[in-house]
Image (cartoon, rainbow, N blue to C red; front, side):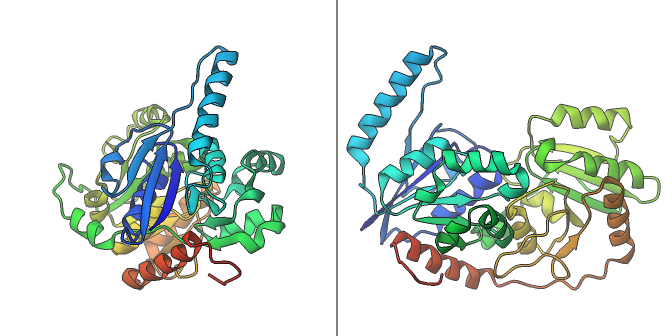
Length: 365
């Protein structure tokens, strides 16, 4: 039985964490023995991890005394390396931003991989991008897995030498589970004709939720509409203050973080995203399973799924045009929804990943 090891920060509320849970559920445990190492063994998704996975913690010191901190962390890594160097057949830094994961994964096996969940070329300046990935020694990974063609193509413009290591494998989802969970009862009901639902972290830099708030404020006198915001994050108070200032309480509801967001999504007329940048949002896949139309600022694809003209609409990131584009969707929506065979997609993704787990070389995946 081959040994696999994955590294992540924690199992807190977020797309990376939920996609990791789904990936672990799609591994063949008759063939692979799997370990997950977390920097912090915590988070709402911790109890969702497949019971066959060995979950461990590798917590580094954040002691204020620099010398003590360095001695502790060096000693910890030294002994970890003695025990685990090349112990595994495959290792993966699943959380791109985890510096610990990027270092330990290259120690744990010669068949190391890193997941790229975001379009980092659009998130950082070129110099910051180079610094970010050079610290993670991206060139030393055996394979680099992207969740969208856009994030792969944009990063390869900066690191063209990585092209022979780069693969696009979108996130796994459990479509049957999503449908089942969407039928749970919730204590909030739709009050207006049009319901937008957003699910995600309440953080302005990437999610730009302020665009949604301004949209509702601009259209509330013309349309009977409301927005449910499912999630939590550092900028929640900022958004709540905006709602209070413009007296939007009847149109915008802060639902909070939910382990099961699907009943809220099920009631939506449109799933709304106004992000500045993303990888391939898991909520796209979840929305497609629930047959929900998507309105989004992020146009991304993998080898199987494209948003425009099939499952949703791409709108502008420009503040004013964003409002005009959404208004145009509301006026002219005639989308003929395209069904997607997620069972077939999952089988293809499993086959792709197993080739990487097994260290298959020089084969088109």
